[in-house]
Length: 293
Length: 300
Image (cartoon, rainbow over all chains, first blue to last red; front, side, top):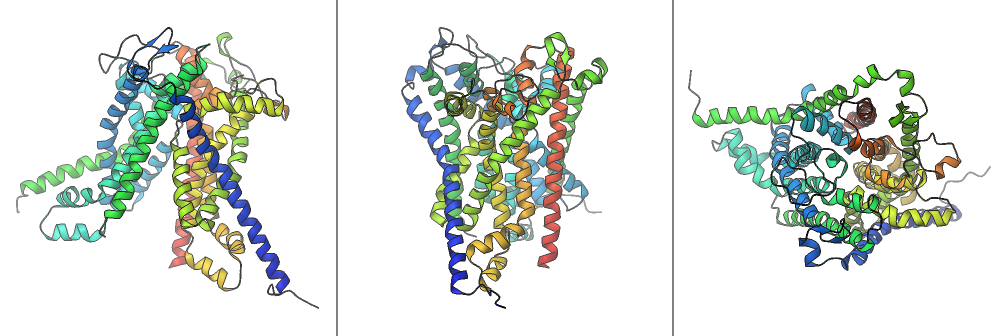
């Protein structure tokens, strides 16, 4: 009886044919996955570029938002992103420091990690409900910039915590040992030595978290976003227009909306979000190139 | 006893602040559950349970049947997963095992861009490009269907699957591959026979989190599924409008009176979504925790 060892020329040839076929398939499917991403970005740029003008970026909307600019939406998204950062960055970085530098490997720490994983998985619209229940109604902030930013900042928290922890863990242990042996307290070692070394990594995570917050619609839907406002918000307790919600409004709620204004608005949000993405990528690659350990 | 110096006292105070921040995640996840229950559980007292699980969702006439919404979410999520799975896994395997470095350096940022695209932008592209395209290609009366939503959702879930599955593949020790190649396996046989099976729990985690991502997605799915709260009649119902749980909350919460029955039921849907995501994430972290333990055993 003849058994195959798998080393006969014919078996080897067939194994290699299979490999060529398999690799070809993987390449093809990957291309099919990635090309639409590129196509979407390019298509939005081509379709939207014509709408962009100084007036479009700086004027108030007019004629039921079918003409004029989108300044209040841009301004609102900047405000929301800024205040989200104000709440989530200090808390998130501190929590990341705790996990990387202080937490022992015990049940309590595991509970924190599970909580973070679950916070990251809560659907965005559920964050909206939570913000409505806690900030808008219970704490009586009303639908306001403050309520929306607080909601977004809790949603952003898990991203900032995880990336901060990861960035701190890449700093070699010896940095801490040397600092403390030179007479620094634990906090001095973290604040003056470890955190500065981890800063690029932390910054990357912060920007990616805020990028997500800037583009979210569902969490601000009932906590602070307004359909249309004739004036800019006067205080943090006013509601505001925001780019993502504005895109939803002009693409589904307003009949006869000029397509070019829709694409233009989408392009502005895209530039905002991808710009943040680009900055994060640049910080990361520059820090990698400069790193001495 | 020696008195603590000023810097040591500061150190202790800061340690407390940081510890409190560390525990904040537990505080917030509990707070979310408490406020969902506070606003949503009264629904159980005010709406008979039988009504909640009836088949008609028509809240202005006080029909609060959740079944069409739950089934709508499940239908869209399942098809989305079937769409996302082959694309996500193949891309992850390609990136981790096959692609030369320069290709990887181009593809990975592109997948990250997709992860960063706001769902409302993808919904917008869905309405203006995907909906008319599928309507023409499939000869449908409307392009706003469960299938359209699932295709878009599958696309949205791809980055989640790619990044976690790729991590899992990368964490398979290099020695596994070298051993397989050394006994004469081709690279393809190594991937199929060794690397992929070794990474299976990570791949499973990737799939589960992809499902979670699809289930919780709101804006994109609301914009392209047509929002008809009917029980999907399979298989034809795949190509008809449906309504998901997330879309129902997003589209109706703005118009209800605070504290009304309708308001409470919408929060109750929020509780269901929260519990779904909790179950998915707990299982996923349990799977990857077991993997960590097993690989410790293997490597020690």
